[in-house]
Amino acid sequence: MKKFISFLAFLAIVTITSAQVRVSSNGNVGIGTTNPSVKLQIAGGGNYIKIDPVNLSGIGSNIGALYFWESTTGFNKLYGSTYYNHSDERSKENILSIENAISILKRISGYSYFFKDASIETRQREFGVLAQQVEKVLPELVSTVQMENDQEVKLVNYAGFIPFLIEAIKEQQIEIETLQQKIEELEKCCQTKEEGKNILNFELTDPTDGDTEIIKVYQNAPNPFHSTTTIQCYIPQTVQKAQLCIYNMQGI
Image 1 (cartoon, helix red, strand yellow):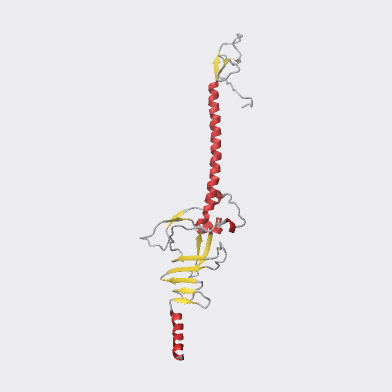
Image 2 (image 1 turned 180 degrees about the vertical axis):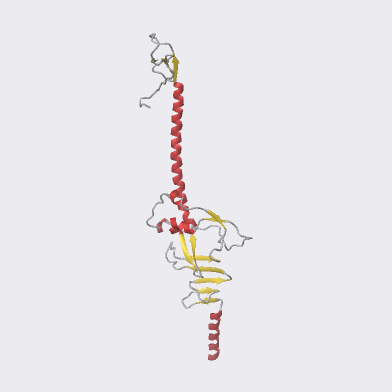
């Protein structure tokens, strides 16, 4: 009986050692790997899946991570009907408003591209940003992860751009409203000037005192007036050019 139990124990050890599912002494579980480095690691067939929930005790913790990739450039696509980010105000501190969002976003460009390892026959054009460029402007939105082959790859938190886009739209709206107000003021000013041209009428007449050598401007009539008045003036024939300027009480 003891020999039989020893044989079963030996068989179990051999099975665990050569099995596709490996549970290490520290509790890590590996599928397709005999040396799992995290709580659950799945590797095989050229694809690499890594689940790394380092700390699940704190609400809003950004320590845990999920990795789904095929190579340094060929990440697998994730699909879902709805995806929510934790954003409860009660779990945040040192809350500051984003300023100069437009100037920040102007330093980041959008691109179209193909991933290098995608099949030429089936690949689709992708749209996005360049992580190295974003890192120079908003390093908080870029994460650098270590691949199994010790190669580093940079990832971008695209959802992190949303607050900057919101503030940029608000900044643009303020500029639009300010410009619209200036346009309305200019339109009113131009309208007043156009109306002013219709208010004053100029009429050439002979001098009342018989002096034909001096330019004369007579009192407007009626005075005061409501909408229309006429200003009589005399310009000698020897004068080739004359100009009459009208100003308001402010000298404008």
